[in-house]
Image 1: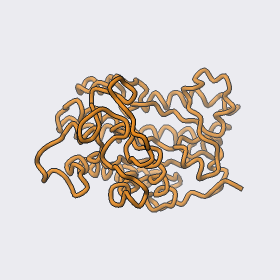
Image 2: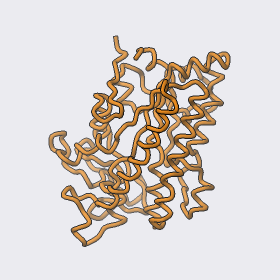
Image 3: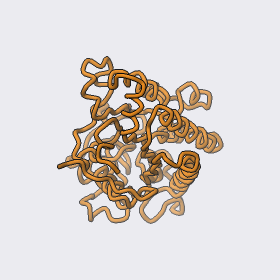
Image 4: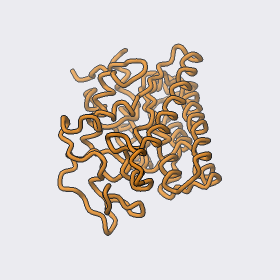
Length: 308
């Protein structure tokens, strides 16, 4: 694959950019008025805390309230389409621009499930969200293909049963509910279900678009070394949040990191989890390595370095 692929627009975490010898991808919302659009020609990140694949109106009809943001996947796609004319001079130029781009779709969709689980939404409703989330992701990919994009990395979800916020929400005295690493089995089973559903959809899309590169990023498997052998990576705590409030997992579901009553650990690099719902930078580094060497991607894909 041509190295120029990695020199245009893509959305990815900093460790991936560093591995490829590229500058960190600037966040779109830091300069949403586009006072300096040229900086987005090498990459742009539309990520927002709490962003979902489905819009807030749809989630509200299911009883799920997202107070963090209304920037869904559809909104992010609209922002990209609005930004494109500032980055390329014509529709054909924009088509070529996207043709030479790598687009990372998320990880999007996880927030729907976290919100639903925390808010006590029924398992029937949550299960029904899975095909809707995946439909939204595949529709966004289809729209981007029409615009000219040819290469996508689509992440699955992480081991939800190992998240301190969900371990706190569903804490139980039933030891049979946990695996040997202390994670809730049923939540990890749900994550497996979602990932298998997503993989099948992506395989279907590959058959429809044989010339399009659609790469599944297995965040679940890339995360597992954090729990299987944490000490080999220097982690002392796997299931306790570095920044939180109280209890065995250092999480208060009514407080966010930085709120009065929360506190941070002295050494975040020794923790897998930052705030109950998100990994620390050091954990992200481990996950990124599993993706970049191709061992956790389908099809297996080795990202070349652009540094020279």
